[in-house]
Image 1 (cartoon, rainbow, N blue to C red):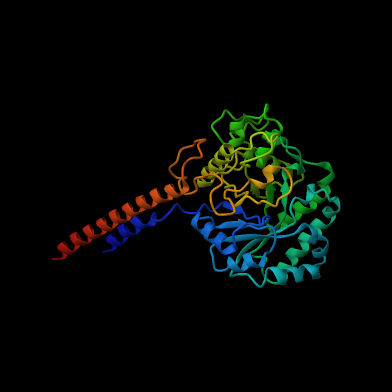
Image 2 (tube, rainbow, N blue to C red):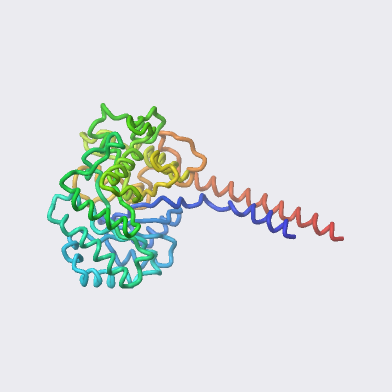
Length: 392
């Protein structure tokens, strides 16, 4: 009978929808007046098999709703709070109020202290950054939560003085002092360096110099770093490795880099070259395929790259150019802004078409799974009958 059990187990080990990609997350922004409530968002994330999300605050409604779900959540200390939480007592109060009441029912795995502080227009914030990070981490240690929750800060790619070729990556001189302190913290706590990396911006600024296919992960000749001879077939991986080299130049070569934001807008102003539905669908679909393979970058091929897509929804109250309000995979009413093929990734081929229906793909997948289930049950019953006859 053990053979029957093994056969039954093997049949069912792959049963179910496409398994969640462990290195993929999504940014759940809330700068809109027409977004669905957190419970509907949780239903959407669950349906998409996404298990990691990042929010830009500590919204108690979200933290409460996401309790007892399988969603791992990164929360944020807003930029304006940095001067406050740099005080260890204030940091302890913040963690006691915004983290402790919800953990561990809500799987908070990270605290982002500020967002893009190194390149913020308010340069005074930079002096508060490392003390705030150290204080928040110290509060987590005091409450026994540091083993479960990492502390870091997301950075704009603009923090780099040089990003091309990747091996020439270096940080801007004016931030190198604070950056060294920050990297020392990451190294001592085993925390990741978070980078907000958008190939779209590079393409928009130089569409005549940068290959669109290279930016979109489409098939292309790519580029070879003249110093390392490493081949890059897409811009995102080159940007990530540029950050790794920049950290190495400051003496910190062992820190993991994770992409805290990346995406492509589906709409833009007349001067925002490349901001189209087609390009957005291709970029995110190709990136998701890479994530399905748990790829690393050319410099770190055996370390899968963790990526958080930006963003879950189009957010109608975001300031700035039209593109800022059109990064979402979904409209606020829950309909797709375009199809990224989350449920069809395992079988669909690379294409620039955005016409494949997510719903129809899921339906087809369900039919295939049902057929597989019936087949496995048939094998189980057949084998069982054979064994029973042998016993008689």
